[in-house]
Image (cartoon, rainbow over all chains, first blue to last red; front, top):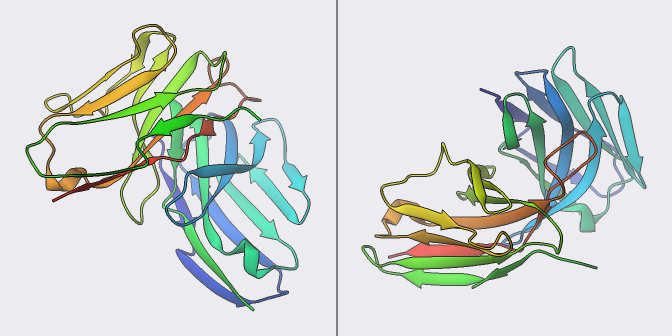
Length: 112
Length: 116
């Protein structure tokens, strides 16, 4: 059974800093790895999807990498802004399940 | 832009009562998912439909939960009777076609359930 772990559980940094969120998964037989953003009391917004054959994806200030062999993914946020404050969820698809397997998320606070 | 619709957005009920949630996926999406998200946790898959058929309901507590997608379009998730531990956010998602390397799931805004 796929298990996804996210570190750290919470992170608070001053505005303007670059930061890295970590995700690890136990079963490397995945279709893809996705990063979502969730604002308090809201649904999920897809940020980046990395196919299993890819190493990284970029969107604006966000860059996500994937290393299947080690079961790790990172989300890099450049020049953080207060509007980036949210919970960031990592999810793996495949690995024995059709639905997504999520980590518990990293609660990010960007201090103005 | 097409979106996944869910209703109600919020529901407060007393334990032992019945409650139902509705989801309308993005038009043309054959696959529909229901997830439950307990506060402070990531979403967990409850049930997956491909058109009107259940593909995976291994994590659905079948003694009290039921889900249907009769015409392969919109879907209803029901809880009867509700228990205090059912308090959570219930998220619906859809994708087309079945999950693949390139395909993502699109999530609705969720229904937040509070059982008193």
